[in-house]
Each structure stands twice: as structure tokens, then as C-alpha cells.
Image (cartoon, rainbow, N blue to C red; front, side, top):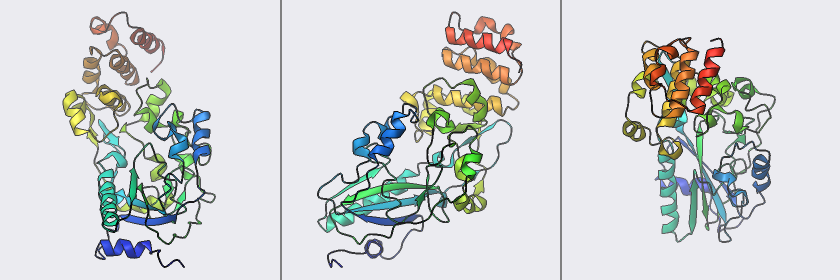
Length: 367
């Protein structure tokens, strides 16, 4: 054994004075190593299953490269179990909408803090380091299995025993030499619960997510949400947890940490753009335009209406934003109040194609 190599767990314990946070897992991979995922990322891109997203798909040849730095001798992988400090939203009451657990607060903050702490300790020992957290320049699951932290699930999420998919991953490349962790040998076996749970068939192919069919993708997309997906969105305002909550390795986290943290949707739709952007700044919001979250909220309210929903939709058909008008028309159709379009036709934007197309569709479709 190379006497210059240290065991990662000893190093982590020492820098934390042997007071570890159970929310974190650590593993390490020796570099260089042939673990490139360039081809895998490129195949998803070539088949269009990335739905036009950029992020790691913008530069697969770099993001999926396991040997980015000649000076790096090790890659430390840090996984953060965000369900340790969070909870799963229970079924919504009428008029309420849900936000995915991942988005309930900035769960990347503790992970970044821990990685910065490790890097500072490495610097004190004169070691070069470079970290990646939620970065388009690094495929965050690249070293996860090799570092012994778990395995890739059929949902494409990285899974760990007792935690399941409820975790975020960061990576530190460092010149310090560590003894490699033992690679994980676990797998999903015959389990396909995530495939069954997905409302839109986005996981019909094992280990591949078709983002074109993913609700979480559409709720972050600037594109017009197709009508078929609007109903499937249900009461979701942001994100979708179906493939996570169905995953057996992580279900203990849900059972013991279920809590009602839903959003009153009519109240949300009364907020100003500034209030929405400030309160939900942790969300990915296209172009930092609050109208995209308003769109999501309108759809969620139509699928899970309460007293005040009808009045809200009528108010929004007079909105100067044609897309919000279009969604409001769909919402009136969804709650079987298309008749109100005639009463308030004078308030609707005139001579706009997407608005008129939605009116024509709503008037001829049974609700």
C-alpha cells in the first residue's frame, strides 16, 4: 500500500474533530480512471431525450470526462441527504399546490458549505483542489457508484441504502492521494416501481429519462405546456416527486418525515412578480420571469380548485400576457366554466393566435 495515501474516513473525521453530520456520505475514487460518461450523455442528446436542455448537455466531452485535471490524484464524492432536514408534502387540500421536496428550500447550501470546508482543509495541507456542485461542467453522478455510495436507479436517480434518491451530490478533485473506496455492487434488481409511478411514461426505458415526458421538466420550461400534460401536472406547482416517493430504499424517509407544507394557490396568484421572485429565488425560473410560476399555479389550481378559483381565472383572462390568458381559458374549461368566456369576452386580448386557438378548442371540447 502506498504510505502516502490516506483513508478518506480518517481524514474527514479529523477535520471535523470526530463530530460528523449524519446527513453526509463520503466516498473517493483514485485518479486517473476510465469512467468517462461522454458517450452516454451524447446519446441522450442525440436521441432528443434531453428536450433541448443545455446544462451538462452543452459540453458532454467535458462534463462526462473523468480525468479533467492532470494534477488530480483523487476525486472525493460528497452526498447530502436533504430529507434529514426536510419533509414530504402530504396530499393537498382543495386549492393548495405542491412543491417537490428538493425545491422546498435551498438544499444545495449545506452541501456547498461542507465541500468548501473540505477544500479549506486540503488547502491548509498544500493540496490543489477543484469542486463541482450543481454545475454544467461536471456530470455529478460520474463517480458515485465507483466511490461506493450506492447505485444508479432505473429512474436515473442515484440511490443509497436507507436514503434512496433523496440526496444531492458534489465532487472535489484534489491532488491529495486517498485510498479508493470499494465500488458499490447493489442494483434495483427487478423493481420497477418508479416506472409504474411516473404519471407520463417518462421512465418507460430503464435507466433513461425522457425529459420530453417529464412533469418536472415542463414546470421549468419556457415552452407552452401541451394540454395533455396540464392535466397530468395535477396540483404540482414546481417539481415532481413520484419517482422518488415510489422508490423502496428511500420510503422510510417519507414515512417518518411527512408534513403539510403546501401552498395556498389563490393567495400565490395574488402576489406581485417581485414577491414571487424573492420568495422563490431558489427555483429555476426561465428568464427570471414570474409568469412561468403563475402559469404553473393556474394549472395546479384548475386541477385542484377551491372557492375563489373561478374568480381568479376570470381575473387572469384580462391579463396583458397572452400565454397567461391562454392558460386561464384552459382553466375555465377544466372547471367546466367555459360559458364565462362569453360574459368576459370584452376583456380578452384580441387578434392573438394562441389565445384564439385556445378559445376555439375550449368551446368545442366537452369538459
